Structures are given as C-alpha cells and as structure tokens.
Amino acid sequence: MATYPTKRLRRLRYNPLLRDMVRETELSKNDFIYPLFVVPGSKIRKPIKSMPGVFQLSIDELVKECKEVEALGIPAIILFGIPEHKDEVGSEAYDPNGIIQKAIRAIKEEVKNLLVITDVCMCEYTSHGHCGILNGEEILNDETVELLVKESVSHAKAGADIIAPSDMMDGRIAAIRKGLDENGFTKIPILSYAAKFSSGYYGPFRDAAESAPAFGDRRSHQMDIANGDEALREVEADIEEGADIVMVKPAGPYLDIIRRVKDKFGMPTCAYQVSGEYAMIKAAGQNGWIDEERVMIESLIAIKRAGADMFLTYFAKDAARWIDKNKK
Ligand code: PBG
Ligand code: ZN
Image 1 (cartoon, rainbow, N blue to C red):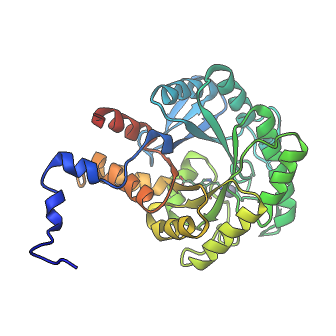
Image 2 (cartoon, rainbow, N blue to C red; image 1 turned 90 degrees about the horizontal axis):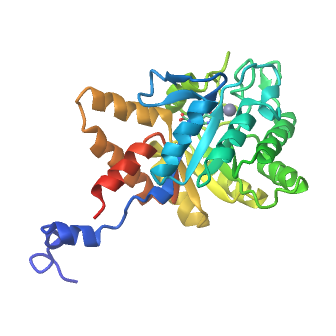
Image 3 (cartoon, protein in one colour; image 1 turned 180 degrees about the horizontal axis):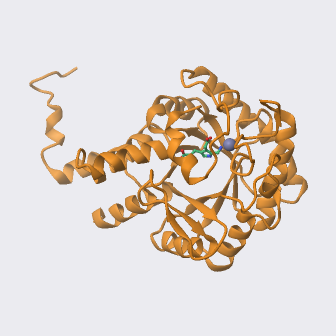
C-alpha cells in the first residue's frame, strides 16, 4: 500500500471542481419533510418564541404556507394540531371535524403536489398532556393503542398520505396497519417514530404544540437516551409489525443510532432534527456566535451521511433556498 509521499489525500482537495466531483453526500429537496403547526381560528400566524421562523398557523394561513412549500420543491409536510378542546381522552384527535382533519381537507383541496403526513399521538389532545389514556399516573398501553388506531383511520379518511405514529406505545404499528387495512387504506404507508428517545431537545416543540405534560415525564414510553441496542429492537419490532419507513428521533445527537439502523435493516430510514436542535443553531446564529447557514447545512449533511434517506427539519424551507442558490 502506498503511503506518503506517494499518497497525498490533499490532491483531491485543491480544485473546487474536483471537490464537487468527489463529494460523497449531497442534500436533495427530495429528502425534506417540513413540520407545521395548525391552530383553530383564522388569519393566525403566531410566532413560537423558542423557534424563530416557526409559527402556529390557522388553516387559511396553513394552506398559504403549503403552497409556498410546494413552490420551493419540498415534497412533504408533517402536521401537528393544537385542538380547540382538550379532554382526558383526547377526543379531538379522532374527531372527523378535528383540527387536523379539517386542515388535511383544506390542503388537499388547494395544494396538489404535496404529501401530507400526519403525526399520530394523544399528547396534543389530552388535557393532561400525556401521550395516552391515564390510570392514575400510568399511561395505559393497549387502551391508548385503540385510540391511536381511531386517530390514524380518521386522518386517512380526511385524506392524509402517510400516517406517522409518534407515541411509542407497544404494538401500535400492527394495530394501526390492521385498522387502516380494514378501512380500505391498504396503500397508505406508515412512517413509524420507531426509536424515539426521551429527550430534552423536545422543549421548544412543547411550546409550539402546547403539549407539555401536566405532571411527570415521558420516560415510561420513550426510550432511555443511553440505549443503542434497545433502539434496534424497537425498530425491528416496528418493521415486523408493518412499518414502511422507520424514524430515529432526535437526529443530530443520535447519528450513531441512524447509522446502525440503516446498516442493520436497510429500510427507508428517516430522522427528525427536532425543535431543540433547531433552536440551538438559530440562537447561536442570531447571537453571531456561529454562521447559521453553514451550520444548518452541516447539521443536515451529517444526518444524511449517517444514513438517513429523509428527514424532518424546521430548516426545510431555508435549506431548499440554499440548494436553489447553490445549484449549478
Ligand atoms: C408528540 C411529538 C413530540 C415531538 C414530535 N411529536 C413531542 C414529545 O414527544 O414530547 C417532538 C418534535 C420536536 O421537538 O421538534 N409525541
Ligand atoms: Zn405524545
């Protein structure tokens, strides 16, 4: 094997054209999923303090936003709903006239070239902010799964293209698959939040979705941040139950998990660059401590290099514009 001075790794780095040729990882708009938050009312565009550039949108504003996303060439959005009324069992999650159901119908009427993914969980809809039905302080698994099935089917009936359960209850993928199939939605894919960690990086999201738990935390269903092997078992379970795409969440601090999942299963693999990852880059950028655009791109390239085929990111619009600006 040749070594220095015959071998010189810098040889491929002097010329920018050559650097472009040997680049291994490239961002594509096809990889982007843009998260959006929808609220009741009209003409509402309320900024989320901890997530500069992100808004709670009423349906009329949401449709405008979707048109912009479509025009930028981003293929998909994921919807989170803030309901009119919250209750113990999160009824609005599976109400045919719930906020998400109405939002999907409005988007589908006016925006043709956009995949609508819906987040399926109970925490935005329950008065206590937990991801399922409670017995005392315990989140009941199987009873919650039944509601998640209802929620998923009702999203599909409203016109959702992809169902994305984010709850981390056991057995929900099989149950949702069965529920969708029994209702004629055999062609609707499931994007499963398969390895979702109990992470401090979700803080800003809980402001945006008004979904912070009233007591306790999510450690009885979301994964312990320290566990990698267990993440593979979670992903395996979801694949066996019928998940079409598997997600790792958060993304940046869990690149090792993304890589292991991709290598082990070879499945379409998604990652979620979550609210806290976004907020940190934004805050440091606004302070002039880092170059926001550069770190944004670096963070997304890292997620893709780790093995993600697609990702959810609040930077989707900015990154799409960056691609337009930099394409040759
Ligand atoms: C709901 C849900 C959460 C996120 C996506 N879906 C919050 C949570 O689990 O508390 C977090 C996304 C983000 O931080 O950007 N279960
Ligand atoms: Zn939840």
